[in-house]
Image (cartoon, rainbow, N blue to C red):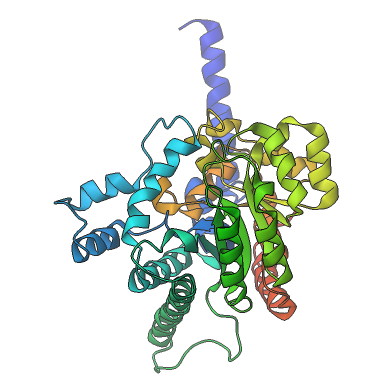
Length: 403
């Protein structure tokens, strides 16, 4: 070995020794410590699609019960539910939603899938979740709009109750006396709200009816209204302005999918609907004027980096502008979009934010906490304050998330 190589090896050895000493001193977290913190961290997820998050085991059971399995086993069902590698665009990615939508055409299927998603989200350490779905996509077998919405709302109730029951059982076991080891009046272990989605390809008059049906459930469970679907084929969100006006008049929070096709200009056009939040919107980073407008208007982008890569909005995860938005002062949140379609948990996406996208732990924590500040809570400000208080209590005991 030459002298230069020996010097380099010695320098590397010294650096490794210093790094090991820092870890031993508790100055730098190990990957295992990061994972434990991210799992323990209370999380809020605002961009989560019901039909993209069905459990494969449940999909197989529903398919067999409804005669739609066509001989498929669990592995084959799982493959049908997952987005294939190398999808060319958003339109191709959306094909992964076809099977779950076909399976969720009755009230019991909607109720069950919703309840299970609530439990799955809670297992990630999620304390607040907004689940969205398109009521108009679940009418093929005669289910009415109102009955479909009621089924999802009941599923949310059932899921929250199941999480509470499991937590109470665990607490009782730990306490050893059969009582719930939790102060009376403490927040539920998970809080859930729902967002009704209109589809871009539907007649605007149909979407007005979706908004009006959703308005009938406005309040405790259903609190938001959205527009989604194949953006390239149906780019004009303004065609559905009347539906948004009906939803807004009912007190529903307004969000709209934009930017999975058409770049920054498509995100800019969505602002004409005056949304509080935009689902996705990441290509806005390419237009400095639009970035400034988002910041000035305080419009939050509900970002889903892995989803954007799978929809070919960005070539690589490292190209996603999450950290650039954060440092530009644009309000953002972080979500999975579709757990099953993307094979992703919220903890996974938080790891991506730290390891690939370049956020620091304090930045990630600020993004997480901001989700509660913009959550669609139907003016339930006491609940918002309680949620923020619970998050702040965690942060006070966890110095690594402090700015």
